[in-house]
Image (cartoon, rainbow, N blue to C red):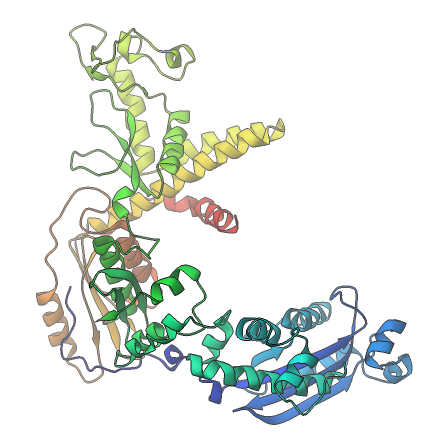
Length: 586
């Protein structure tokens, strides 16, 4: 893979890559008084909000609210807000537009509250009751920040009044919305000042804080100095130069710096950050190139602190063998023997589920004996170390035609094998239809556990067939050039047999024809191969496919054909998407 060497360095891909500096951010500090603690059952009685920029108060908002329900005596005792005080106050339906307008006065407003889930929960509930979409502001919780930043025993608790006194805030909280919001402003400023020496200087880092960085982390902040503010890959190394962790980012300097601040809260990575002695940046032309290079470097170096993508060779495939009497087998490698494969699967268990889905529909043999067509009706069986005793129990159950003893002829068996091949490489409808019909039968009989197992098998099969079919289609294309417009110019990629062979950015003022000719001429040579992903890691090819599928991507030139079966596993993506969401939720 090559990158244009004359591209200027130090290019900021977008202002968002740097994050929002705390000094430039607009915070709206909010406090609510309510009739109780339940956002669904209680109502708001008072709203107080303070807009802050650069640590200074810019504007304030305050109003009582008629809750439309009686205020409990204990709430009146706590807040001092009585029924008569809110009797002539506007309702929440009238107040809500003003509250949201105050929050929306500046783009990029960050909402701040002490015990933020309480206040945001009530506002969300109010929006839902009155048919207003919740804008989804980024939120900073000063209670959570205080628990993370202040040392144990530094304050007796983390209540607003205790923190206000600790930071010397001039306003004393009194359970009235505006005064409590003003006190929260002082607490926020105090916490930000405590975090500044720890390297937290942006809103994104502030929101990520869960606990202060370790001494070892802080001592390595200098490693981010001098790194380019460009997309690319970073490699953390130890004192011996061995790779510890590999990552990617749209902005190398900002991302590497975050590992040595309070924004990094993963225990395993905090441990790693304390061992780092060096950082190697690999500048890339685009985010796609960075993602691809990250996969390649992780697979090559297998850094101990990376958990994902470290061992792609352990992926499993389901293969229909090329024997005279083919069988389904779970394998780790794809050989150029012409056999169809589906996958890859992250685990052998999922591959086995897909294999069982195929066997549920096609009565293929499951024994591992070698069959050779014989002169008579039955094939010659080579047991391979195990004694062959004739047809197995699967034949008696009707799950195998027993070609071993001649019950099923070679021609009859071949029909089943070819049907399995077609389902794997083309239309999976026979497998899908058979499973959905059986699942419906089981569900109607209240046999839900069996139905769920069958559903999981079907999902595994469709997922693997879809992946293999997509990978095979792009792997058959010997040369493809595509481009997508970005802030910096036209991000252009050369793809050969599913592998990213070159990437560069066509910047304004550059001759497009000369740029394209140079990029293609210097792109990596990628030979053809066999299988769904012969020339690249499957993960790399899928990254390329996702980039090509983006509506903003434009095809520049192509050799050969890029096609998928008309009736393919792609038509059943709702199954794989549903399964992915289910797995993520567990």
